[in-house]
Image 1 (tube, rainbow, N blue to C red):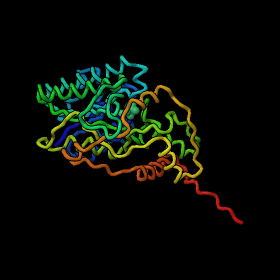
Image 2: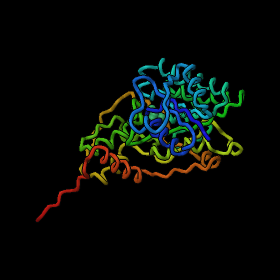
Image 3: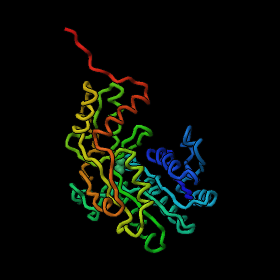
Image 4: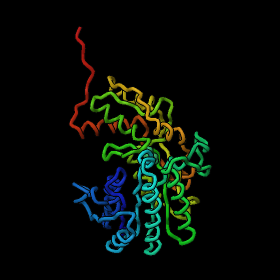
Length: 328
Ligand code: SER
């Protein structure tokens, strides 16, 4: 039996990961940790226990762990890159203060901990193409600084205290369920919403801006598989590069146009997001994840696009627009 606490269960990843964990561990308690103002609703609320857990409050983490005899914590609390630049102190308080609280509870109570890192943990000095697993990590954003620090702190707790910390470096995550909030890769989600709603998409990044992206079902599977991986095979811990696709705005736009031929896009640059994206890698090398725990993505850009368009049309009750038949 496995009892899991998800901190940040109502966020972009948590909403779906909590449900997937409840299906994966039907005999355990999978606890949705939430903060005031972001309470779980609907299926998330009804399908399992919830507990108030503000990551900046160690007593609340400990209380949830004790109450549900939690053995694994998924720490998903974070501010995404662009919003973190507007609130760097809060980004540190949540990203590192919160991680420290989580690791301390895990040390005292014997929990394993998953804390996602990111492509944002790299910076302009990192090799941009096929970025190796072990390489330069000198990010220029507070988001990246918290992610690298988090990788190091998690490794330290494993080495020094034997806490079973593991994680992956997520690319931009794309999903039709819960929207991201304030990230640099968000455009790759927003573009699908615009296409389905028949709106012209205003792209904040310029053509040629390549970043790694991943469809949410692959990301959820990665988060669970790394925690289930055979520890004897793991050479690395925090954090594994994982990858499935890399594209720029032109490539995703043209892919969507294959299915929505009248879709239009214009470039409306956002200097902050552009500067952040330019400092991140174009594509990661995920060989270590493939070798150490058999990581394998299932979705490519085409498969993800078909899935996203179909599910967003269903979500908004929008019928697929067929090209007009012209009778001559
Ligand atoms: N999706 C994140 C962001 O754009 C990167 O991991 O901030």
